[in-house]
Length: 311
Ligand code: GLV
Image (tube, rainbow, N blue to C red; front, side, top):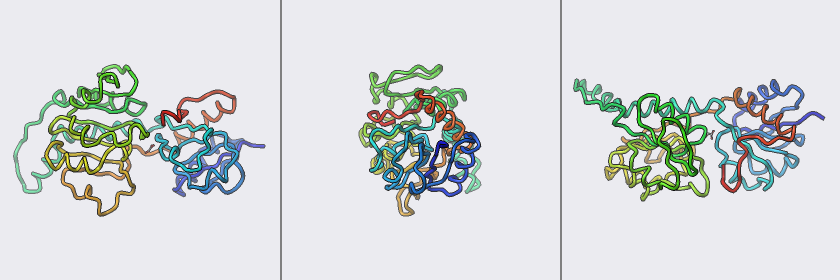
């Protein structure tokens, strides 16, 4: 019997692309779209936010591959079998996108782009002083595969970069902090803080009013990870009382962000609709196919989620 792979993805187009790409990499497998888990019982599934009944129908899965770097959408799933191995995407083309997104935001701040755009609206010719990158210490909270790529890209542009991770890490050219230094020490030295850590029970609401106040006066926050890391009202309060200069937000607690949400109209908040790093189906399918072959040979694969840790 061929290996069967079910694709559960909310986007019809993305789903068809996954089927085509995985079939090309695994010509002997039977790959089919199954949003709800209907159809033949599969050996593996690949997807994003499987509907509630998915795992009740797909009862023979040997592993589930997240079609995303994050797996919070799976770990919160009410039907997820306790022993089912979960595997997340590692980079697969997302690191470079994330790095470009964050570098662009950092450069916009350092080069005062918003202020020049505002001046243009009133035909104002006023050269503003631009401080060099060396005056802009950038902090990356989360030094995983994506965080490390963002950190090294921004450092290569001449910014002093520090990174925070739970466990000690060493990344060349990056000042590495971990839990033993404390988040307060880390945040207090960031002119821009970039959130790039997984959402887990331990990291939920990490940036609350107290921890936002650890950032220096006038700092800017960028969230490209998950909305649940940040207490929204605390962010609004910190900006409105002038402690933070503003924020760039790509992710939100509830997506799509509702039209009446105060973030939309806030003059110091820049919003994008969860696009900082979009899954590249072809690259991702190649990675999933490689890992699936390893699993079939009985090997373990990198990116396997540690359920206790939550990523
Ligand atoms: C997207 O948000 C991802 O986790 O890959």
